[in-house]
Image 1 (cartoon, one colour):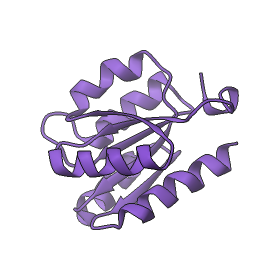
Image 2 (tube, helix red, strand yellow; image 1 turned 45 degrees about the vertical axis):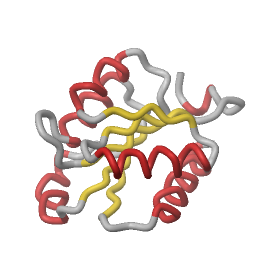
Image 3 (cartoon, one colour; image 1 turned 90 degrees about the vertical axis):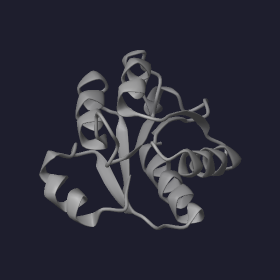
Image 4 (tube, helix red, strand yellow; image 1 turned 135 degrees about the horizontal axis):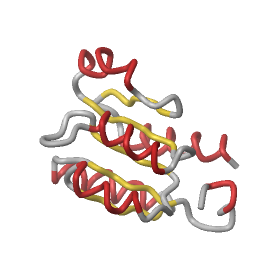
Length: 130
């Protein structure tokens, strides 16, 4: 069910981030802002959850061991074409090199960023959707 059909529900975010501390900070910040967050430490852990549907946004690190965030987003948007994607990365060169492979419905947040800026970006994304 996409965001347009769930306007009465709390937006659901799937967070894929391999750094435990960063994943905790992001999860708490998004939950404090009113979002429902499911967090995993890898792209391979995220895929089965995405197959079940029900997420409005995939927030993923680009550089992760195993499946990187670009591949995760590519597979996720094949399963859920209307899924929004926000990439987070500390590696600008990687983001630029792989930009042509990113889904059209995606944005990149460059680390380091303030948690408030990330929440503001997610808020902006959902305000555009509704």
